[in-house]
Length: 494
Image 1 (spheres, one colour):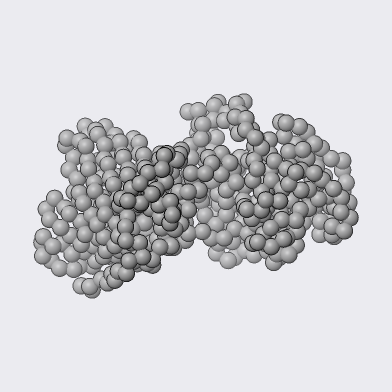
Image 2: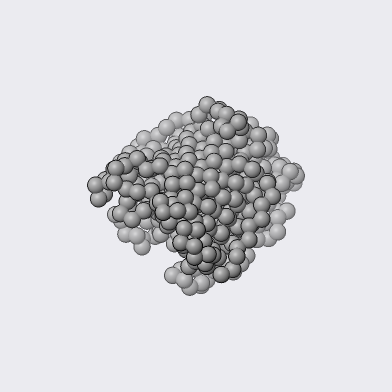
């Protein structure tokens, strides 16, 4: 269904980036719908081609991938170099690179996974010939997530081509789509469902399924695309099945709940995507790719990631709170320039920070993209700082958007607050480095208040790479408190 822009936090380091002197940058502030990092420039190129014109209002059509990139994961895949492949999740798909040494300009250098096949069959592919068997996904394909009556991926098992059965159909080109499917996977005929727009227009002999006109027109459409910074008209999908793969089921009608209301929707499963047609929608949004990227991530990784993303969204929407951090470096020959920090955040984009340095204290006030610094030791007073030199509160938790292997531990009470405990692996490459230092691994423990869903504490551990003879770990703790407390942050102009 229609993808909405969701609050996310800009890409910056986790706890270590609380230290302005360690390279904290000025990114989008909490509360802004900021684009996230692409795991590879090739992913960005593929997204930009079809969805940049949509984002810029140059194309009146629905998203091919979604408004912005999501979780980055290196997933195990036996038979590929290194036994894994780099993937990135989007609302509508999962992009992947299976041959990093291949031609980066080749059309198929970036592919998107056979997510529909895996969800319907309950078989997660973990190698060229390896699979993890699960139950088919009990997740609605095209409705509100809490619709207990809507068809799920599991509902399509008995009508789709998968390794668990081949369910081909005869060529019915020119015929009407009148079949209706329910959550149990039962199919019946309702002749009154016939529409001119959904007349069957193409028969795919390779898989034995018919494609209705609304979907065939969508798949064969041309429109504004952006390549190398230039917007031109070209086929949106070249070839037509680049994004979707081939159909693995017939199209079926269903009555589902969308935005809380009963709505008729036409659903068809393809190898890589699910297409939906909602006649009641405005024309640009009648045909859409289903949110299969979201669904597959939920299916593969379970509940804890959704707890994490919900906590970050609540954090971004919170009007004010206090934070305090402690940084410790467990190594013999590297100095921590700023060991303690504390401050307040005020929506929509103001942060006040006091930090204890090795040579004294300093204050930083960030207002939007403007930074003011007051070095109390030097007594220079407030001065306007150059762009990029200040503190951005989004750096506290931004990198958590790229957490993987999110698991939930036993509930704990932290700072007097009953909390959920999430443990996760962080991606070291997204953490800016202190001069000459890099990180080989990073992990975090996040404590989320069970009642409010807001952050209580973040603990991050970074393993130093042995460059320059430096070894050991850096550990950072960040505590959050005083949510909703009135704070006034103003910057004294120099």
